Image (cartoon, rainbow over all chains, first blue to last red; front, side, top):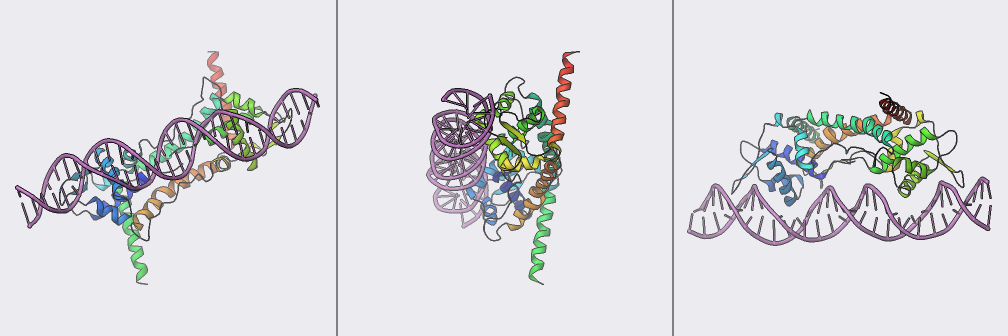
Amino acid sequence: MNFSKRSRYGIRALIDLAQNTEYNCVQLNEIADRNGISVKYLEQIFAALRKAGILRSVKGPQGGYLLAKAPDHLWISEVVLALDGDYCLEKEEARDGNRGEAEAQVVQSEIIEPINRYIDEFLNSLTLKKLVECAEQYKDAANDMYYI
Amino acid sequence: MNFSKRSRYGIRALIDLAQNTEYNCVQLNEIADRNGISVKYLEQIFAALRKAGILRSVKGPQGGYLLAKAPDHLWISEVVLALDGDYCLEKEEARDGNRGEAEAQVVQSEIIEPINRYIDEFLNSLTLKKLVECAEQYKDAANDMYYI
DNA sequence: AAAAAACCTATTGACATAGTAGGTATATAG
DNA sequence: CTATATACCTACTATGTCAATAGGTTTTTT
């Protein structure tokens, strides 16, 4: 049970991008560098985000990436879906016919489904904007530490 | 993001065991057979459950397995922990020093931790007894279908 | 003594993940 | 118009985990 690096890096990179864009695009290698992520790996991640309509890109010198949506209309569920495919836990089914069907059904309805529902609702209510605000708070707090 | 077969099979087998024990032990191969699970694989699963103090075993003819605890005192979190180790999502950390530390921290505190908390509380409040009751309800419902 | 059960350890095949490598295409700046 | 900076594309690889299989040994009952 885990969250892939792909999604984690993608989300971190989007937070970074949202913070550093000033109507202009931001270069992928800058983002990769600021976050300690392999450039080549982040390329693949951004390709998927672009295909999903989450990012827009500009080629050539001074090119880079832009958010295709406002951060408060970009849900984290979309991002995870674009990067990892369906994040729901796999359905539990008895192998053949009805041997152990009741038991499999119970695992499905009493464990898998409730967890799926929670994660789905949770990621569907979380926007990039929220995460960016948190990152700013965190940075402010870290800065304050220096001045005490 | 998924639940392992190991845990799924383990839980299903425990539901079966709880339903079929009558103060006597139940043979592993019967459980495996009833649930369409490989005997050899279930052996490994039961070995782990025994080491975790969830099952007791009796060797020799007429031997088999018994629950080591009452079903209403056996939490599903224990079972998953015994079979898969820690089921919490891995911690998100910036790779080196503080490059991207704020972003990594946000992923950790705003995504990973809330999901972990939910799953932990959920599995910690779910007992085997509850699952057995559900399985019985499900079987009754399936039986009723025949008589309509 | 034979058989039935648990118990133990090693091996395997398939697959996914995380990353690397080496290029091509396109737009801008000079 | 050429060099360069950027995105874009496809293939490959190393590692590890999961799900199972295989082939035994040990213990206890009958």
